[in-house]
Amino acid sequence: MRTFIIKTLGCKVNQYESEVISAGLVASGWERAAGSWGPADLCIVNTCTVTGRGDMQSRQMIRRLRRENPQSIVIATGCYATTGAEELDATNCVDRVVPHSDKHRVPAIAEGIMAHHPVASGPLERTHGFFECRLTMPGTDASGSRTRPFLKIQDGCNAFCTYCIVPYARGRSVSMPPDDVLAAVRALGDAGYHEVVLTGIHIGAYGLDLSPPTSLYALLCRILESGNIKRIRLSSIEPRELTDDLIQLAADHDGICDHFHIPLQSGADAILKKMGRPYMSSFFADRVERIKALMPHAAIGADILAGFPGEDDRAFEETCDLIVSLPVTYLHVFPFSPRKGTPAWDYSDHVPPAVIKERTTRLRHLGNAGKTAFSAGEQGRILYVPVEGKRDQDSGRLKGVTANYLTVLFDGPDDLKGAFVPVKIGNPVKGLCVRAQVEKS
Image (tube, rainbow, N blue to C red; front, top):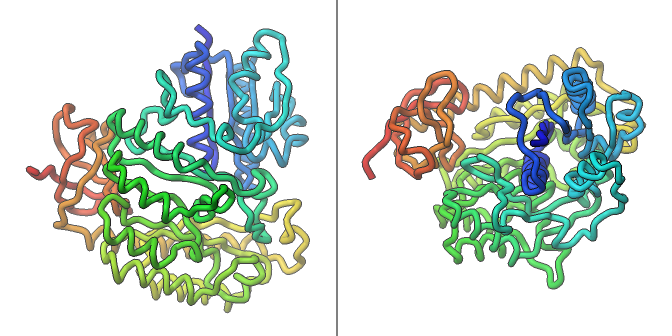
């Protein structure tokens, strides 16, 4: 049996796409390697290039796989494989660099290399087939072993923020047709899943490229009306796309998780303008306050980019002050790293690396404080969780995630795995992880 390993860096979209690649390989007769680093006949790295660290980690992972599997085929794909193909070739550790536009062809490319028959490249038409929705195909499952599978409904981005390389790596926004999304959600519901995470690079732009155009709000209404899944979770969504209608829909329906991840990037208006972000800090604050007014227990996360060129002490303090003033649950903090090919690459007023490191650390402390306060405030509530198939490694307890993004650990028998159960929230463990106990429904 031919075996493979696939390693994934970066976003939830990359994770979903790796699962689709894995499903394609399994359908073609491959088997997952027993060891996480091999031995394996085929090693795939689904790379990320959103930061310089992502580039470095991608190269490190490729080199390690080559060291531990010297006779195997090594394929690099993903965003860094699109923007940094020459750098990956220079490692002399890769047999094939597959850009994002050909990612769906990785199983066929691997077969071609094994048979010494190279598969021709060429982008797939970016319509229905672009999403390779294997979830609807009998005998395959792109969700892997997840309790809360991802479903990519959109790809690409039209925003072109001055620091971001992603639109150059993935292209312009494209959407999966609504009927195909509904079919995929139905297939997941029929397979026994209780929750699906809708993901994309810019999901707030969902449907604008379709004919006739539609919207994320309209798609969510159709999913709720279908009744095919207990609840839907949204991945990251831009502030301006969190419309009043969408927030109200989530407040009115338990079928949409009260968890929102909203990219902020900076709390200083001058920096937001320089980043090319189409809102001011007051608008972000308005969205957070609107959510909390309608859903007091909602979890709200935010992305922050520390040390963007021109971010002086005053601008940084404005960001910290904004975060402290708002009921933000957690932060994803990224140190700025210039990406060649973006406008910010040529900016001259860079922040010293040591200052960026200090600011990143301080922001992460603020994020940790938000997690602690949120977890403590949820004690005593009864919330439903889909129980994961594996117990928590450290405690041996069953594990699940609430609609508002708390990871709960609780005692119970194995026959609860895969069930959708009510739990009473107990004491915090760490961050957004809490103890709980199963309640009789």
